[in-house]
Amino acid sequence: MKNTIRLSAVLLATTVLPVAAQSDVLMGERLYQENCASCHGANLEGQSDWRTRLPNGRLPAPPHDASGHTWHHPDRVLLDIVKRGPAAIVGNGYESDMPGYEDVLTDDEITAIIDYIKSTWPNRIRASQESRSLADEQAQP
Image (cartoon, rainbow, N blue to C red; front, side, top):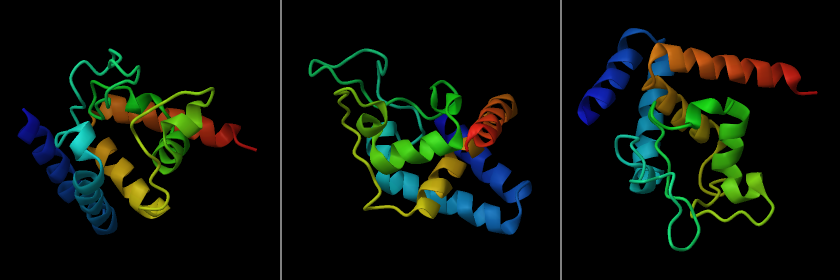
């Protein structure tokens, strides 16, 4: 199943997307494997019991596949979470094991990772997340 998800993402990238977007998705997959997979899983599956707090009070890394909640966030928020880390976004003393990557990855690299993640989602989830992103863009001053 896990390999099927990766294969589906690659097939989608190579059959539907323009050449430039295909290379962005493939670059995003490589960057994801290098920077995210150690916590979020090589197949975007997240850590086990990701909704149950660890003894230190922090939450395990959530999945980025369709079973998680990544798709509930607009692109702007996803970029900000990766860039600054969840603790900076949530505030109020929230603690997370995830650091911000703004000194490690460029905005374009973060966007490529997000695009790779989105390429693995079923069409209905991708459409829902795209709608959220559009509404968020329209709400920005």
